[in-house]
Image 1: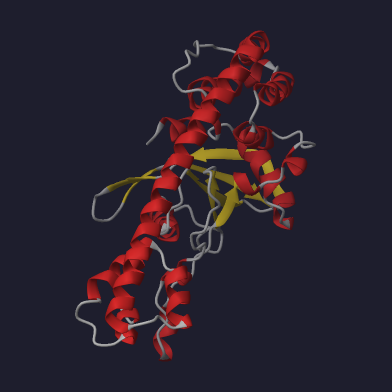
Image 2: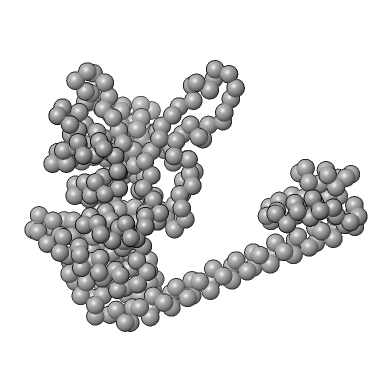
Length: 328
């Protein structure tokens, strides 16, 4: 597990973070029926029937309505897109249910309690993986289609949250998302100032410490690699440090962004140049073998990526017609 995953796990090991996440970002009526004073962390380690250890991130349970019916909240933290996340979530839920059965933790009617699987994603690209396992399984004709499993998880994509929606929220999860999206030390300082005010009570010492660790060891070091970030124990220390070094660090921040942008631009330019060269060479080879290229062939070539161009280049010598080349 990465430092980022560990720090998120630490943050969401506090009930206030879980409560704010649900209140602020799960806009469904049943959330209003939860008794958040009953939030209780559940062991996140399970041993499946074949004795292989499996561990997910954070699991909570909370009382729902007037009955002692628990809604289990299964949180998974992701910084990269996982195409088969739905399969992972189905596995985690199956292991959780096995554990509940072994422990006799069923409802009054002898059934299993509901589970809300949540994927909290903070990657730079937008999440594009299937959110229901049924969408990962090949569609087949006939009655066999009825046996395809269905399991949907709730995706919370931080990058898709609009800043104008996050700004007015007095919400710890929203503050976390704003820090992730901050692009200037001044913006970060404003959010940290709000956190200092919200988390000043003595009973919130652990959560203040968790935010401090994440900001200094993950967020700041990710924004400014190579810059020495001193260890700090309290959020107000981070706030003071940002205020004192805001001008210096703003320049550092800009320089890091410029260097990263130049490197990414150079890499894109190289890739585009290679693809353009392969395209021109393939066009010459096709014209020499089959004559002047018709408009439909020109259109296919213009839309192709490097992988497709390389595939066509491999079959050109064996193909008897132009159409055979583009069937590859």
